[in-house]
Image (tube, rainbow, N blue to C red; front, side, top):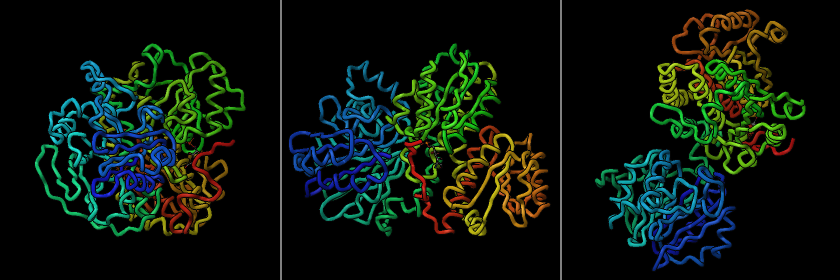
Amino acid sequence: MCGIVGYIGTHAAAPVILEGLAKLEYRGYDSAGMAVFDGERIQITKSAGRLKVLEELTHDGATMPGVVGIGHTRWATHGAPSNENAHPHYNMNETIAVVHNGIIENYLPLKEKLISRGYQFTSETDTEVLAHLIDYYYKGNPLEAITKVMHRVQGSYALGIIFAEHPDEIFAVRKDSPLIVGQNENGCFIASDVPAILKYTRKVYFIENQEVVRLRADHMHFYTVDEEEITKEPVTIEWDSDAAEKGGYEHFMLKEMYEQPKTVTDTLMPRLKDGDIVIEELGMSDEEIQSIRKIYIVACGSAYHTGVTAKYVIEGIARIPVEVDVASEFRYRDPILEDGTMVIVISQSGETADTLAALRESQKRGHKVLGIVNVVGSSIAREADNVMYTWAGPEIAVATTKAYSAQLIALYLLAMKFAKVRGKLEEEAFQHMLEDLKRLPEQIEMLLSNKKKIQKFANRYVAAKDVFFVGRGIDYAISMEGSLKLKEISYIHSEAYAAGELKHGTISLIEEGTLVAAVATQDKLFQKTLSNMVEVKARGAFVLAVTNEGNTDIEKAADYVIYIPSTNPYFANSLAIIPLQLFGYYVAVGKGCDVDKPRNLAKSVTVE
Ligand code: M6R
């Protein structure tokens, strides 16, 4: 995720900012920049690439004198990683500079309005809209201009802002994107994350949604979005710097699991407009959507599992045949790609060698490829004909969680869009599904809050040798991901089976006490899966069931039940996967495994 650091005080700002940004490097970024008021004007230096480039360009900050400044490391969202898109961004006469973390959902209409009023843009970012919008509302009072902007924009943001006409102040605001401020005897600091300023102070103020802070060298004032001054209490940070990088969580994987409600919101909300789904980046007219005869989904690992889920969803609601393939198979098996076949590749990193090869193979055969990608500017994002980004931010743990959840959302949106355009989904059903989608973030949050219960259960299985995950339909796809989560980080052998397949061989592996995790969220398949549970239980299995609230019948066949809240059956994966992620995580923690960096695995598999 992007990083923000700002400083105002008695020392040179640039070295403090560079040092703070270096502490946020672990979060991943693709460009860096700083704005410092040099006594006359706001000077900006920024560049694509590592922080080292910025350090070299500024001679470790020496070329940017001044005691007020803001800095940023960017993880590209709107627009590729480039010098122009790097932050900070100016207004047109370079008297305002802005750094931004988050996504402005309504940036396009705002940009159009600003252009019609004569504003010129030099980047593709949503952030530049903010710089011009602040300029538009600025009549000499920064607080007034900023709060007006907060009323106009939708989405998530943490902002650091400086004004040449107010060189003794920094302004910072936030909504749904973290921001803290702190103070010591040498000045005041803003940061998107604690590690950036831990060296200077352990007393920090957490800025809440829709709050504004005005920092001077020796004091800070806090305001509501309605410009009313408020008081806040500081929090003393006890974490060491390693814990601080993880936001206080024990591992990045746990932190990233907890980021899933936000990831889902960020991937979903910018694509919902006036009761409809708008996927501008799809680049397909309604006629083109209507003429799709088949969809091929190609990916690896967890991304492949989201493809398996999508097959059920797309076929179920849009009635388009879908074939899902692992990229390493697809690329070598001379796939039959007939006219009217749409190819979708899915990848968090956008660098997976086999997925990239599958994309190229499809293009060689004359097929356009849609990439569902998390890393902006990655190889797949650059080479795909169209890119639908998942706004999960950087994922550091090797085991994917939040990017997986974001991919599911992107695929649900596609399925619903296709279904609606092809006349397969009535407006009323479509609206109900939209409501269910919007409820997912809070439902995920609720499931995450059960972590203690799952941890206790997981502790009983740290010595397990084999675990089986079973389910039917979408529940089978969920089982595949639950099984992968467990095995890749805990090194416990686990397998996922379509529950109906058990009798065809696997059931002979069940012994007294073998753990079988049965996923049963699909009402129409519930009784079938229940029978399979009874069968394995009769052979000594310990049965963990994941099912919908109200399905208490399951308690007859299961030894331990986790209930998920009610949602549309097509979205059950987004909820049922949460306890399974937590289960895999806590088993691995209980075994003392290196959860974030499991042996033999890499985050980005750039070789075949
Ligand atoms: O970056 P990608 O999404 O293309 O990566 C695909 C797989 O390598 C990835 O999902 C892998 O299976 C993860 N370790 C799963 O947690």
